[in-house]
Image (cartoon, rainbow, N blue to C red; front, side, top):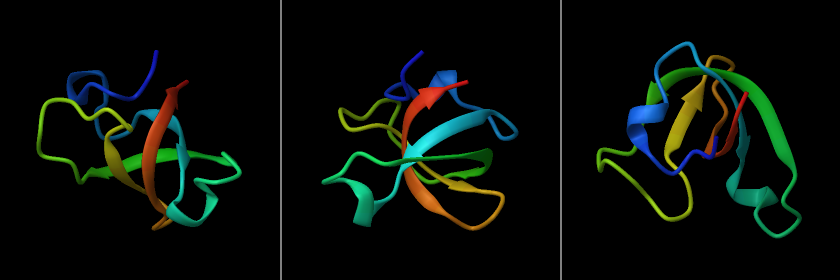
Length: 63
């Protein structure tokens, strides 16, 4: 599943996100969602979340 729809992502979901500084390389960081930061129901680049370790990024994959 991709991370473009907010309804697919809940707190506690394991995801892979791309951080702002990694957008050019596409490097993904894996973690567990702590907070959903995007308010709209969908976003073309992925829903922005904060992981439990404090990393903020846009969801590219839901594990």
